[in-house]
Length: 213
Image: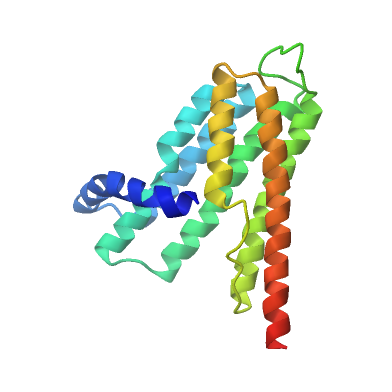
């Protein structure tokens, strides 16, 4: 849904920046790498220290590189298989860093604040964040493996954009003022939605495989 409705808006918003970078001789691949480093460092430096708001702001500053590099590649006519491969691979690194940062924080037995009424054990939070990390990787692999076998798996209720927006917005707001229980609920829903997406993609590939057979 976000890819369908939000991408045109952000493409229009970031086109001037992409054009400027191209005029300066910056490669789309450089933007991809710098963006991934920014997201990963923001998540792995600030989240494990419980600085959720600052971490989210840093991540947000770099996360749109994924849009900028795509615009640059199209406008320069330099779209390539290598660029697509690099972008997809580093997307997985960025996603794992975000959830990994949360795992590191909660695995240390910490909480952002003392929500005495709705306090959730840090161990549960760590487990939910880890489930989101693992299932998010499987969601991506299920699609990539299907395409490697000559099939498609473009189905599912939890695409990357939706997962990333949900966890970043909630984590940032929890770091600011929201009770931690909100992050618990969002992580649980993301884990469940990712699991459903994996099953949906497996069923879609099974259908195509049986049709070929």
